[in-house]
Image (cartoon, rainbow, N blue to C red; front, top):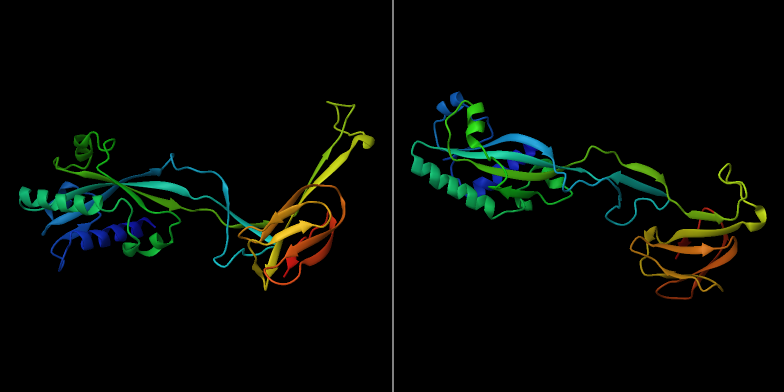
Length: 282
């Protein structure tokens, strides 16, 4: 994945600097003394010196997976944990025989990257095309490389102008989990005389309320904006983009579902509450 990020940055710089006929090399090496002594032409080097999680963008939650043409399966819910957001820290240096050439080239590199706070989709390569979020960049961040001399000392090379670049990408180690869709939620309330020893409820005081959910479909496709009602109760709902509707605070019993298609008469369907199927096929 990070290798594809390197290739994406290389493609962007070649197009934006621009670089023609390979007159300038772009490398991703550790800029040590022996390495720099072997350079034979002007070079832009992006050294990845740190990788860490972005705690500001951290999320620990589940998200629903939806296919491009609607729900994957109305009988199954497919969920996945949100991916980690990772900051890739690069140090950018330029290398040429003349310091003025280095400064001009460094300026062109900075202008190219400043123009793109988000890496453009036209230059994405490999796994970067599948990223769930825009690839955000931060160039010359004031809180990075606060002590360049220490870094260059560890690289055993002479101090030279350098610019920090941070690219934030998503890393997803999670597998998709399939689980049955929740169709019924039951709430029972009542009085108990035995707390805290047990939670046994006095039968005469028990009251049950049920919340149900279903879908409206036509030719296996979810139908959005369809009005659904429970006949004779005053309960009414409108389906969402996934064709789903809900009714809450119902008593157990037998009911008739009504659905109003865009054309034609309302469709009726007898149901029992609770049960495991409240779907309507138009």
